[in-house]
Image (cartoon, rainbow, N blue to C red; front, side, top):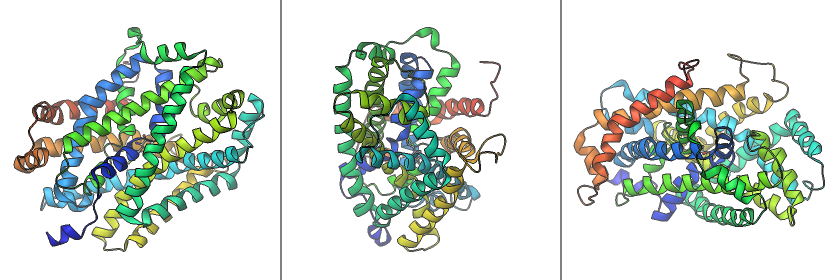
Amino acid sequence: MNEMSERAQFVTRLGAIAATVGSAVGLGNIWRFPYEAGEHGGGAFLLIYIVCVFLVGIPVIVSEFVIGRGTHKNVSGALKQVAPGTPLHWFSYVGIVASLMILSFYSVVCGWIVEYLIQSIAGHMSGHSAAEYSAIFNNFVSSPWRSMLWTLLFLLLNFLILRRGIEKGIERVSSVMMPLLFLILAIFCIYALTLPGARKGVEFLFVPDFSQLTPKVAIGAMGQAFFSLSLGLSCLLTYASYFQDRDSLVKNATIIASLDTLVAILAGIMIFPVVFSFGAQPEAGPKLVFEVLPNIFQQLPGGYLWSVLFFLLLFFASITSTISMSEISITFFTEEHHMSRTRATGLNTVIAMAFGTLCALSFNVLGDFKILGKTLFDLFDYVSSNVLLPVGGIFFSVMVGWYINRTFVRDQLTNHGTLHSWVIKPLVFCIRFVAPIGIVLVFLYGLGLFDGLL
Ligand code: PFF
């Protein structure tokens, strides 16, 4: 008990939710979701995505929460406690490696965002032609020094927040940034809905074209749900280890999954009308954010402000996600290797800086260095999203559904019998059956096993 009361916690319930929503809401929602939905036919993708979030996403979130909050330990310590005397705690390395891989490539995109934010504030993002916006982006990513510098600078900011700890660092930053993020998003959505292309954009997002409902779309939607909800790499387990014993895990999981989905939908409402109003293509991929949107913003009245607000929104979304990825290894280093918080944070940052630099260089000097036909940036993205996250998701749902002591699980779901809900039974069913089977499908698909079949 003594040991537990010394351990940091999120102090307020709202802070715990802000931090966890902050982890979930990131580039996955604002950049990847609209682009994936754009590629997979809008409404049909959205429909399947929501089904995946509720049938697989929430069960896996709850599984991670049960282990994290039930032990109040880092991922390795938690697995040692729930599976004593077994080698299962070695599985913690899957999450730790995955989190460092994601942090490395994600920080490169975050570096671009910081550069674009500063350029927008300085007023350099207006008055160019479409071709010039493409050239600006290409010049930027092909300059080894610039992309490396911004990646490192972003990681330094990440370090400065994390060094301050759970309450003063993560909780405080998330409690300020998340409400601002929702506010900026709301302003954008209201504005976007007044544009001439609004109707077409909203229809594209909400009216499902059922002919598009193929297994491939379904499996793509599940992959997106995993990345977007930060599932499978023990990030949510680690955050839940800082939850208080009175928090309701099922309620928190539902709020987090719902808000994450809401942000993805709002991002669609914000982006599609703008894109359709200006005759651009919604499936432009990474370019949408860095080439197409800056060009559109400058054509809008008050373009300067829209551009600054948009990159600020992306910045808030991304830094609250990177601090959560980093926390997995920081908690592991401090608790399993008895490092001070500053040292552990420093070690996490140095590793991320080393691999982040290599990822930044994959767009220029290391462009020809390929493993399995992919640059390091693409390889890290591919291996973490398509292999490590699904494997982690299967592991946590099977652990909670089948392996861990049932009383332990029930106590966590009901806060030792003080909470009752009809949701718990169907939820446990999903943890035991629906989630692992669903994820096995994504996993096999991610490995290309269904190529040619679907
Ligand atoms: N969920 C984040 C996003 O949508 O951008 C990405 C992410 C955060 C993945 C934290 C993994 C993680 F541990």
